[in-house]
Amino acid sequence: MTQVTPFIFDGAPVRVVPIDGEAYFVARDVALTLGYVKPENAIPTHCKATLKRGIPTPGGIQEMTLIPERDVYRLIMRSRLASAERFEEWVVGEVLPSIRKTGVYSHEATTSAKLAGELAIAECFTRLLKPSPSSQIAMLSHIAKNHGLEPAFLPASAVDATPDSTMGSSMETRPITDLLVAHGISISPRTYNRLLADAGMQAERTRRSSSSRAVNGTRRFWAITEAGLLYGKNITNPNSPRETQPHWYVDRFTDLHALVSSRVVGAST
Image (cartoon, rainbow, N blue to C red):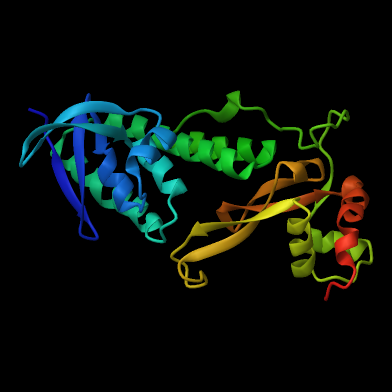
């Protein structure tokens, strides 16, 4: 019979099953806990390594969908609940160590699952926020070092340039505040950021945060859109690694400003 370890998060059940030395979670439990209204849609959409197993319940054995740790992180990344970050900390700090103590999976499997989970988070971050190539290399290098792996196989540097660039080298970038000053544009960065968003060059993103500075458990930040990548790049915010920080190409700013200049008329500083 399949061994099931039950856990409770904020009154909601989360069942964990050891399979081949790795912890698997009942997918529906995780999805419901993270606020997905239709788990049957969310699970196949966001999870990549599902499998089916018969799980004992009061009503008998029922076939359920199970997901590994890395798919749990994928669901966490896309959850809109403020408690999702706390759920992640609970999984990492309480659930996995508790299972480890029981010996249901090995150190090697734990390390492998953790690495896969971190790579899944990096994958989600890249797909959703489109960080620059250099930021992606920095993330992968950090993950490699965390697991005692040699990051030498990664490129030493990357070309951060517009998709249509033929220069073969990185283009200089600056944050919008610096560019406004350099070009003598008397509009506040806050107002100009809204103009860039109105022009479709960037979009406001949110993430869950337990920081006292977060409003209702949510932090807001800007990320350059697909269209905006012709004029700038997203770098990882050094103060908040889960956020991006738009930087705009110096040589393209005149063209970028021309796109939003019609919106500048009447804008308040």
